[in-house]
Figure 1 (cartoon, protein in one colour):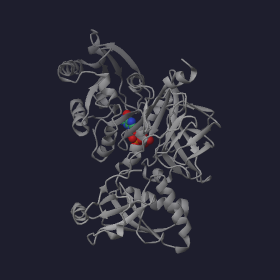
Figure 2 (figure 1 turned 180 degrees about the vertical axis):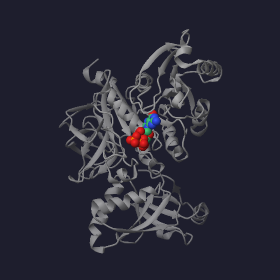
Figure 3 (figure 1 turned 90 degrees about the horizontal axis):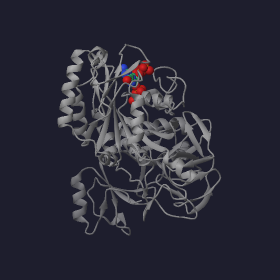
Figure 4 (figure 1 turned 180 degrees about the horizontal axis):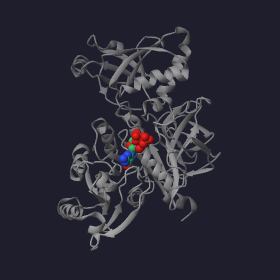
Length: 528
Ligand code: G4P
């Protein structure tokens, strides 16, 4: 196999999702520790201390302790090259999670063992299921009191509509957490729970070992035997195809904080997942092993570093090899170009890279030309990847600047933030740029907008919530929206790409519009 094919084989690119506080940061940190990417526990996390999670860039994240943006970390482990994509933990940013998942080949779902699938994050997890990518579950915090194991699995199955396969089985929990039983090897990986202890001693015993009782105690042994019998009788069978098509999630139990069960999880994870898979382009699928470079933009982030006021476009490489200074073709811009300052991000350190392969994520300096979903490919082999769908916003507000002298900054700020996909902006037909209609999927996005306009663009805004709840794109291309017969509370607007849209306060108004305007076609998603 040629060198670059070898490199691609080694790649694993996954997103990590969880409800805030389930332990995503702690798990990420432990994974990085195994990869030798960091030397010290605590260098990634520590929201309550002065140190901040390396993947949290923005002030607002630090203040609220939530992850708004998603970042990328790369590390090497046992000959593999692993890319972790962090995702926001709040449902209001589920669209960002969806885009990040577009760049991932699989997802790790971290769940707090005392809580199960949490209400607020159902939406986030469902987004994950929507993408049909393999989901591997890590049930964390077994060193604390946990919910019944069968119940936890049932919860995942019922809420997410995905089958579960426990790869290992916990023995006790909290102070009584004795370790996990690995179903494949029939071994028990024993753990000594010791409050506050960060490093644990591990011991391996077979389930058939006569001394098992001495290690986990007779009560736990009996319980384990019963559980195992039940599992073998009633649980789903392991089916790798079902895992890879996202219909079955392998489940691991452990404790990220005490570093228990993390390495076995990582090792199995690498076996359960595949190297980068072919990607669907508009006409064909593109093999990662194609000799031609291709990538798509899934995230744009401005002002990651306030001192530089820069804007970085993150792209996922889908095929071939990227080399610094190589000439590429930006399909949507219709231009040949060289990607400037290609970088990979390791924690807050950005490293200029010389080369990267299918599966990798690179960030490039963006002078304002890229949009989410854009294709970058080799000038010798031009094509376009399928776009990333835009979620229909569910909340709307009218936004204008307090100080009219700040009009320029206001327009720049709202436009840039919209280009990043953090909000969607629209304009009422015939109105000027003094005010814009902002649409969001989750209301927390409004707060981010207000905060960022103030901090990055020095603009104070006045925001008035609008009563609309439904948005429809007018699919008839030559239709003048002014000619439409609409209910008085339906608003005609247009987006950044000059598409016409309508805002409705109720589904009833949508029906009214369709009934009173023959031939009117309304779409729920923007086509481009
Ligand atoms: P997140 O990124 O998903 O939001 O969660 P994060 O890793 O920040 O973990 C949230 C809290 O849960 C942290 O405590 C962390 O130490 C704790 N935690 C994570 N994994 C485990 C685990 O396996 N067992 C136990 N007992 N706790 C765990 P904190 O009090 O918010 O922060 P800190 O004071 O520990 O820094």
